[in-house]
Image: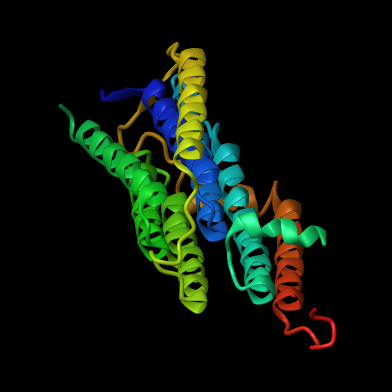
Length: 114
Length: 171
């Protein structure tokens, strides 16, 4: 029987999340920042699916007809739904921003104060 | 070494390398293409965890629809490597340092092993469309319907935001 420690998935997810954070902090292009936020959402999704499988494996040993772990995968599905809606509105905001200040540089966003 | 283990390490390396390239490539179009690579490797992870429904949804919704939307907006704005704004070297250094220390803290906090994932196929069938759909349309039907309202409001919001403003309001 082939088993994989949950640690590896935790490390993968943490690394992807950190790369997303570094991207948000280093880049000035609003679209790239938005893409890094998507990356962080996906890191969380991977970890949720991994924990769902881990929970299912633990419950399967006691009862072979269990459906434990289904909720986490549905949770990931709802995260994807919300992310799709978020991307639509976010990109609309970025397009509106570009139309007003002709740039997607977030350093120009302080013009919104005036 | 089992085939799933080889696939895991290959997909992990691919995901991390592509994620790095998303952050460090100068051209925004290349960033989008590398992000599609990240999503494809995450789809591979879902497949080796036998979460088939999520693998398909991730492929279609993320790598398909959302990334095409990003690519469309970038092409609409005509962004390229020359027009790409850059932060100063010290800001980048500080960002990488703070991100690295966050990763260090998280790994130090979560390094204890708490469980295992079995990769044997056929054992965990919870990721199949049949089982997920049954739960989604019985227990979780109310959140499902609410998410349709969310989509409707997101669509209305996108149309309102993207509408061309009257010329007298633009300063």
